[in-house]
Length: 226
Figure (cartoon, rainbow, N blue to C red):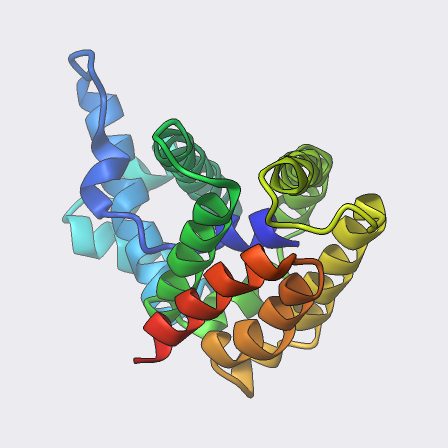
């Protein structure tokens, strides 16, 4: 499903992970340093390829210190996923608060998602499936993200971008099924995420668009490919 895919992208600036308006303590600074270094390495090499020893060595801290902050790699990954999720949610809220249409919001999300996949190793996504705590988090978050997506689609009807004769509860389920198949079959190992989006996601989205929506979508696709 669209917003869960976005959750998994790691193109956020690393400096964004360290934003904090209050004066952080030494432990908070260390925690952020560990989180930033670990997520950078996870994205580049995959989660399984990165050992806790590697993270400690890269930061010039003892393994004991690392384990005092994060009990194990799954806890570290879990905190990183939640952190990036919050950053992405804040970013999308900022974008949506401007003078933008529903299509602007959805296509901006797609653009960020595609860029995120370009900068993240396919091994990262494959490795996530091995961590029950992470997958449970995605499942628990799904109801909220599906509700947000449904609200956008309904708003798109009012703005004239989406057809009014469509069962959008069913559409949300179809998008979720598409996402699940892409992730569980690890299709991203065989095809680029651009190909998957252009041939699966965008075709599905185009099918629910009005002529006005199709015009905006086709222009977006043309600009992406040019």
